Image (tube, rainbow, N blue to C red; front, side, top):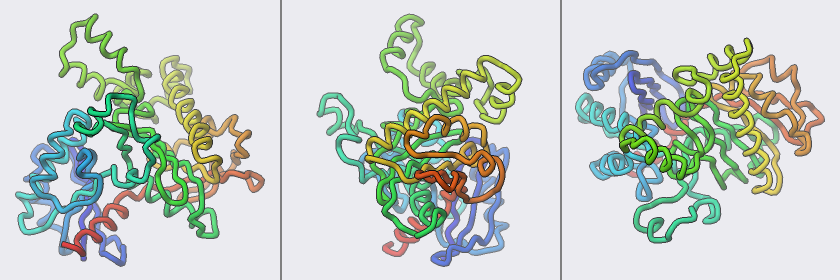
Length: 367
């Protein structure tokens, strides 16, 4: 079975066709500057040199009913609409993209692999907010966690990289990129994640605010008489690292360059980000009663060695000792801690597409 995994952006579509279950990549590509999803997809897919048996999406937020992988139907689309406020950027893109694929490839089944699936194993104490239980029960307001495909891949890949192939590891997975989260993984299962009800929460993201006291927002709305739509736009497009640094888009590459030449706002953004990651590593080590591996993945996690160094500095009390030489050199999946380090530090190349294809293949086998 050939499964096309589509990663939808606001103006682009990245795709990869994998032959399953062999997991061979047959073709991959990217459609840039998309203005009309349907037209772009129709043109690009008609030129593919391979057959496509199913299309799979790394969907984001479908609420309590859709915390898994499903063949797309109107129920899936309604759930994406219902939780649009919680994931306004992601869900709108996927609603539009799925509709476009339905029109462009009407005879090909579509599959939505929700990012929340991997986090279903968390215990109640890591899941529930201190709110009236009726809000939790009736409206599905709890900590879902996101980036599930990435963290799940890390949970499976790390044992191979550190040797021994043992699944009995306590892993802290740091998915760091334009969107960032950290996951505590014990024996292959998610036990906690920094993202909660929405992908807005947790660490600062490129343009999204991360954790913030809700009363600060209520205060600003009151003082500035801001309408809901304005607040939503500001928090999703001008918050996070972009808001802290003043760098449009909040790209860590640009922030790092400005920080290196002494820009105060860029330095604050870099330090806030690194501090948040370090603090979470300590908290998750406590939650798991220890840690065996700290893994860095995602665009920032894989490529920004200065950030990895800043995060690991001072974590010697955990038994973690970073090799500055290995941290700066090398490429691909690798160990970057010293031989004496009790906690292994690794870099893992993200492969969310493979996890989405695996999930879709399992679902299509039952379809």
